[in-house]
Image (cartoon, rainbow, N blue to C red; front, side):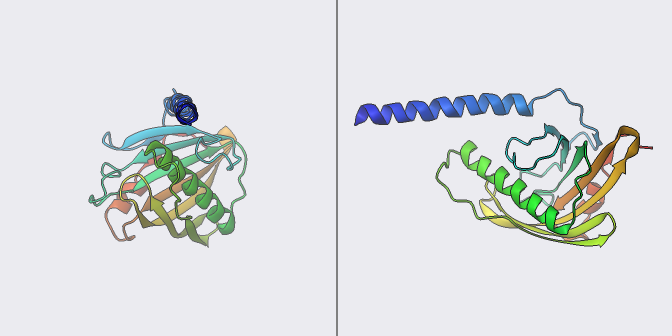
Length: 201
């Protein structure tokens, strides 16, 4: 019995080690972040398929900028960040498709958090997104998500999402602005001041 337990633990350890190495190389790529923000806004670039949300079948990149207090649950800019999908094909997103995409995205992200936190059997509450189209290319709403990384609580992210073409590069851009703060809070000006170093016209 003891030998079986040791073998199981060894397999789990090897699996975690391989996963950690794979995650390291996926996150530490040489792609330059096109998002321009202050130096204290942490930068990250991911490639599709996203390691935590492989069901999002897009081709392209995700460029991210995190507000300085993103990972501090008592900070005013806690969990406030911008990410930009630079996609090779038109995603043809409507409100329903975006809700499904955000549910898939955050469910995958938070379940990855259970692994990095060694909470292998923890059941994460499902993400619930509600988005409405406010004009031809803009959507607003909320994303109810369980924060596995910092607060271990359900939080409500206010969301603004906008889409625009990048014809010169034959790409499609999808902007995501997220924060638990209300729309009147100063963090929203900072989020929307993040620009992309892309020549589209």
